[in-house]
Length: 398
Image 1 (spheres, rainbow, N blue to C red):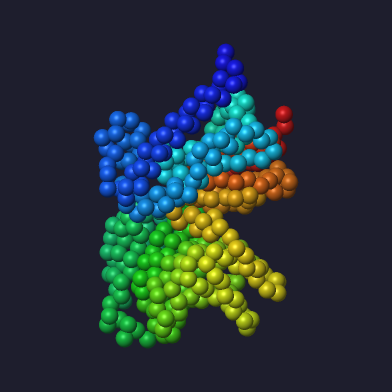
Image 2 (cartoon, helix red, strand yellow):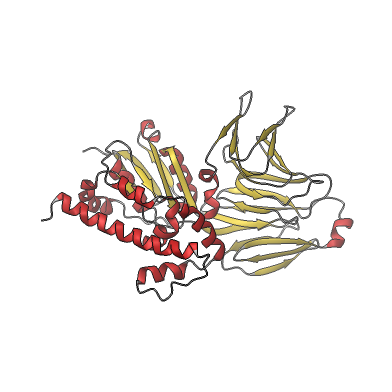
């Protein structure tokens, strides 16, 4: 039987091998994708290169990987920490997540590996990740069920709605702008376990998260470009200084000229606006507007006198549109709430104390949730039990 140290050495050999694979793929990034690794002898590297076929995805992940210190991450694996569970894929997700289908780096005690078979037996139900799906309620009363497989062009009196694998693009008819007396509105609703991308008539890009509804006009008329949001969305607004873009919510309005930001209003008593670039202004009732700068987040809650503005890592609040979940020292109940919307399950905690456990990590949205739950169990005194589509979070009694 192997000793504990020997088992540790075997694990480190595997991580070192992954690190070597990551360096090869990073070389691919650094060459601006001009060189091909298709002829690489290692089958794992060939598989990664084959899957990284989207130029935009390559560019994004390449920039992320350059910010990741792989050697430092491997050194952290050697440290023992019985107190806090840390799950990290980090910026090297382009390599690790694709090679291992959502691999997770665990900062903890490797000697607990003997518990894994027991956890595997207990977590048996399969929770599928979400997918691109939505329902588009057209202004004329028709409904269009959207998904990845749908390819369509839908004629309306105001224009053409085009649907493909990239989402929905709406184009207006020039003569409809001058003849339409009142703005006609479409409504796009995203169910639990869904997400979708939309291009508005002015060219503004919108990413809609699960359990979200966006009401938007067929074409923008008048002095402002107004849309109405429930849930969560990321906006990349087409610049038009003469016509400000306004996101209207139950907790106030976000006014912009041209910028990229995230708005979350899942709770009708709170709004969170996170700005990546440009500038936005938060308006509520008759209060003076609050300006937000890039890298800042505004939070306003019902009953509070003034909103709170703070510096944040915007990636934690916008990565969902890039198919990642990013958590940093976040309460377990918040993590489970986010995961529940995407994997479509209910969560029940045995006690209020368990909700306040702080965890960190990054997870590929389209990967299996079960390895994440197992690692949570290994690093804490918590156990997860899945029954049908309910996850029970209990204290693990040893």
